[in-house]
Amino acid sequence: MLDPWTADAFDYDKIVKKFGIKNFQEELLKIKNPNRLMRRGVILGHRDFNKITNLINKNEPFAVVTGMMPSGQMHIGHKMVVDQLIWYQENGGRLSLPIADLEAYAARGISFEKGKELAINEYLTNYIALGLNIDHDVNIYLQSQNQILQDLSFRASMKTNFSEMKAIYGFTPSTNLAHLTAPISQVADILIPQVEEYGGPINTVVPVGIDQDPHLRLTRDITNKLHEELGFLTPSSTYHRFITGLTGGKMSSSKPKTAIYLNEETKNAVKKLKSAKTGGRESLQEQKELGGKPDECVIFETLVYHLMDDDEKLKEIKEECLNGTLLCGDCKNRTCQLLEEFLDDLHEKQIESREIAQTIFD
Image (cartoon, rainbow, N blue to C red; front, top):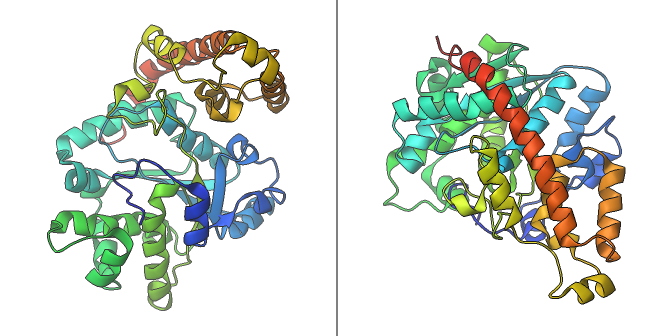
């Protein structure tokens, strides 16, 4: 069972097979100018993305939904979502960005005031600094303050029951009711671009980490039940891998040693990366003879996910690692330099971005 709130380790192949998620590589060949994360296999699966591919290739409109739960600092792993949003925006996607303050309150005990503060100063500030254009057909709202969402949540709740919620999420009779209803708000978030007030039914894609698939399965089931009544179209979704934490395992906002935060000092972030897990051998001689293991290396993964746009250069680095001509120290120093440049630039942009973010709910 997948738990969207506490999942930590993932057997991606097992999850894809168990829940009927399609391999994204089969769809990749049909996409004009695919996103870097698509090309590199970071986005590994999808549900009905062929519908979105067709719309992109024909320059026809579609909606994109991805929520942000304001429960902690934004780290570099979260950048994956923003990179995808920018690509969708460039390809005609109409963005809807719900701030899941109801879920943050139910699942993490974050007050609505604190949730709003985190959303503005952490998430929205960094979304803008990373290059997202919030003035271009983007709907941003707080769950707790959106009446359309509340109405849609109520209608969605009539199309499910406790047995289904238990089967998907593992809820028990002791689960508090706020936590029980939080997924219904997420269903409404995904469907809100299709309500009459926002233009009516439209094909929608939801890019998420694979741990969020329970929400998509619930939404697709409820959407089918609402189709006759409201004409809603079943949403598509894509699923990405998680970047490995600096110490191995999943990168987590609540575990500082595992994460590079987007707001932390560049010097401190570089220091963390220098101590990160690599795919090197036990000795220098063994490294030269056998080569490194880039697919097990946090440093190389950071290049793949975030710091290197040039596919050919990335391929060259991997080959040099595999044949033993590129040593871990040299690769780590190069990657730290790229991280330093990235963060210094981001921090400059955050100053203006924060001012813009603070006006969103005025």
